[in-house]
Length: 223
Image 1 (cartoon, rainbow, N blue to C red):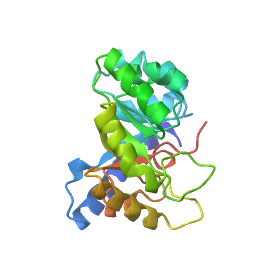
Image 2 (image 1 turned 120 degrees about the vertical axis):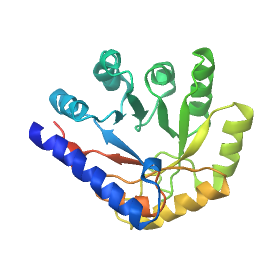
Image 3 (image 1 turned 90 degrees about the vertical axis):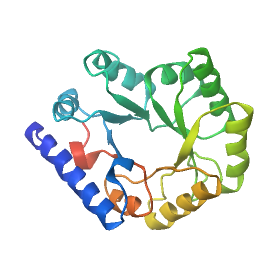
Image 4 (image 1 turned 120 degrees about the horizontal axis):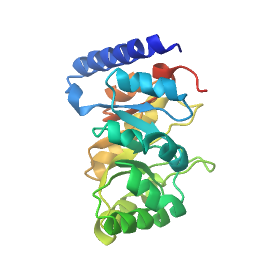
C-alpha cells in the first residue's frame, strides 16, 4: 500500500467500525482498533502515526523493542499490545514495553508475567488466549480448563485479566468461535473480547469484540 493511502485506509476502517457499532447499538468508544504493525515497513508505521493512530499490535518482543522503544519518547500516548506468543524468558521485556498482553496461554507464562509486573510495579492488562477450535497445533487454554485458569490467574497470582482472545480455525466459520468466546467471557465475568482481524472484524464486532486486530486492511501486505 502506498503511503498516501494509509491514512485513507485508517479512515475507512474507522468508518466501518462506527457503522457496525451503530447497527449493533454498541458504543464505538468501547471498540479498540489495534493496528497490527508486525513486519511492516517503518515508513508505513510512521504514516499511520502521522494519521493520528496510537494503538498498535506486535507479534514479537524483540521486533517491537527495535520499533517502539525510541518512538515512545515522541508519542507518549502510544498503547502497545502484544498479540503474538510469549516465551517466559521474554516476560521481563514484554512487561516493560507493552501495555496489554493478549496471549496468556498457560500457567508458566501467567506466573512469569505476574512476577515481572510485581517487580516492575506495573499494572499490565492481560487477555487469556483460548483455543476455541481445540486445535492441537495452536496455543491457548482449552475451553474446558478456562474457568480454573481464570481463578488461578486472578486469585493465586494476582494477574489482571480483562478478557479473552481467540484466533478461529481458518477452515471454520469465524462467527461460531466469536459467539463461543463471548459465552465463555460471560461465564467468567469478563468483558474484554480480543477477536476479529482484517477479513472478519465487522462480524467480530457484532459478537461483542472490544479489541480488533487489523493489519493488511490498514497497511497492505507485509514487507
